Image (cartoon, rainbow, N blue to C red; front, side, top):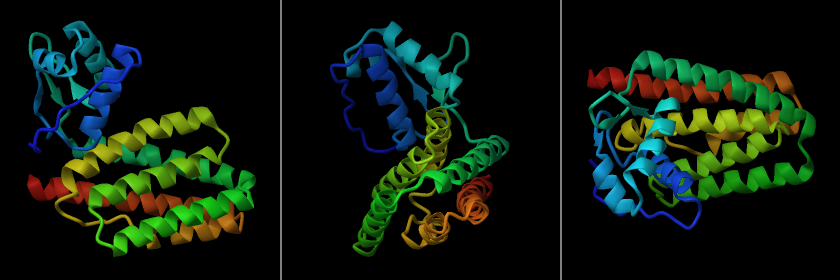
Length: 224
């Protein structure tokens, strides 16, 4: 379990804010797989009702982040290699679709922004940033790339899948850097995007996401 850091809820609707805070804590690896999420404790820490916490946990369960069992405390969903593979394969195909669409829509301003963001990843990587910090920059890069597709429903679906993948990476890879986010890992994607080469962009994106899947599954297998 990571060192305790206090969670806070902002002034948005309490149920939505509670859901977002808990979701982010899981994605960032605050709790390990199988760790109980005690409703009364979370309620006290966040300053919300137990019903509000319960509703947030139900949403997280529907997204695969939490496991709910009648008459027991919720737990952080355990890592199942077959489930990890399924989620990554779904993400792979949707990311490939998003970048195919992006090759049709991308502008010079978009490319400049993506290169600037990727250059920042490179600078932070060379400066010794933590993997968690680099993952956050990497997440932002991919989020920006998806928005260029001009398909908001696709982008939202990918956000949900990417967050689950980030949860796996946070729990498994931060201490065992099999894959560290770097500018070089995006080079083939950006080159294909600049050329408006949809097949090459899709291929580069598939390999990029599948590389993450292989690292996560290898780590799960090592822990078995």
